[in-house]
Image (cartoon, rainbow, N blue to C red):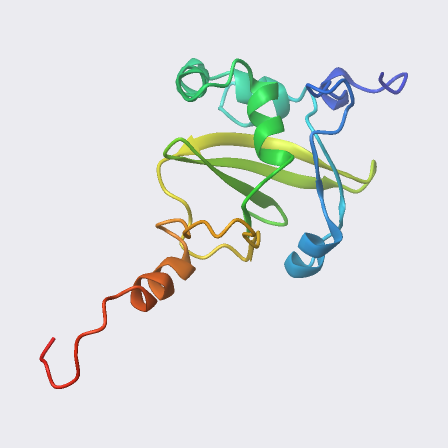
Length: 174
């Protein structure tokens, strides 16, 4: 499903559920981040010789990235973007007006960078990659309802560690 006459790089890739929508920036996230709410889509994109680009073509241009994603359990780029964009843990501002969606997965912090396409009124995936560390202070973070412990890199983890220290008896040195 594409708009007639739309350049190939601007055409949407189908998400694993058969729609064109990989996720959403919700009203809650948009309010916290000072940005637009809306759908997240993966466009075909392009990859330039200098390494710049966006979308599916850019994400799939690096075989090492796909090998890492395979090792984590993602069979393709679409599955990786879908996993992050539909249920991200945190969001940070990125270069310019871009946002980075973050999700923990098997010892990695999965990053998907998106930018607002004002002419089509949705968020478009620019790039994404798995990293070993989560940024220390995301500007928006999902509220956990399952009593799980905070991520080791989160700002909350320091507070949690401090609250979890054993109490020493009164009068005893620490």
